[in-house]
Amino acid sequence: MTITADFRGISLRIGATIFFTIMVLFIKWLSDTVPVGQLVFFRSAFALIPLVLFLMWTHEFPSGLKTRRPWRHVFRCLLGCAAMFASFSSLKYLPLSHASVIGYLAPILAVVLAAVFLKEVVSGARWFGVLFGFLGVLCLILPNANTASLDDTYLIGVGLALAMAILTAGAKLQIRSLALTENAGAIAFYFALTCTIAGLATLPFGWVSPSFEQLGLLVGAGIAGGFAHIMMTLSYQCSEVSKLAAFEYLSLIFAVIADAIFFDILPAPAFYAAAACIVLATVVVALKDRPARPQPA
Image 1 (cartoon, one colour):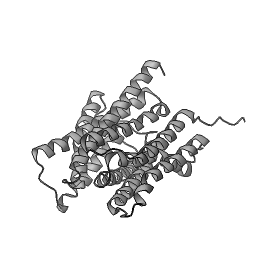
Image 2 (cartoon, helix red, strand yellow; image 1 turned 90 degrees about the horizontal axis):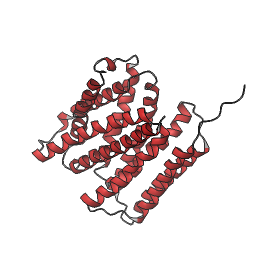
Image 3 (cartoon, rainbow, N blue to C red; image 1 turned 30 degrees about the vertical axis):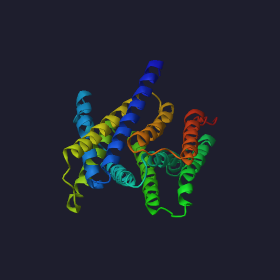
Image 4 (tube, rainbow, N blue to C red; image 1 turned 180 degrees about the vertical axis):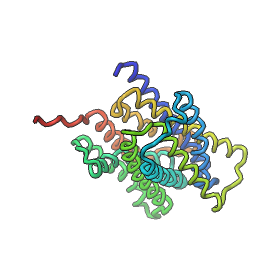
């Protein structure tokens, strides 16, 4: 792997993080006025546009959509779709930065699930990441849970964000399994298609007629999500996953900036403690974790 390829991979991963933050910011603006199912539909349907264009550009459409494991795709898509519903719902109750911090549990939980279900050897650095990740979430939650009023809406948001993190971790295990035999474009395409259908199924439960501004935000969320997915996939073709993992957490900084600029929400001291624990956990996993050496015969 050359330095140029690594630099390209890092640049693409940072770009993906920026687009994901833009997508979540648009969803946050709409979460109080647009039903969750409608949000999921637009985010997924319009993400198909850049995704299909990219597959056509790489000459993998429609040939790249062939699969030998359709039911595995179904299971992965259902997990990811449920995670998206939980994620968008949590944005009704939580500041953008708090939802982002709790969402950072997903890669940490994936380490635990990989050890249990994939029988992976978990190093000390990974266990350190798990412990400090949970410590960071506790630093964020406990100051709010101990208040005299016990804000139920905040706790609902925390529960939804935790559910999203768990479901996302499960989906990552399925993606890891699928990636051994399936085209990366097919994995992303079927996920977006499934979420589009699931979102459309909520139409009888009541959708709103979006204003011109709301429609622009809905379409923008989908396009931004599609570009983010493409850039994230390309980044892993240019550089190693472990090298890029730490850059995913730059979204924490972007989320804090977005909260301060657009919602006048300044982070409390507890947030800095939570962010420090989680960023430290992920950096240790990314930089200090090494594959186990093979045992001599």
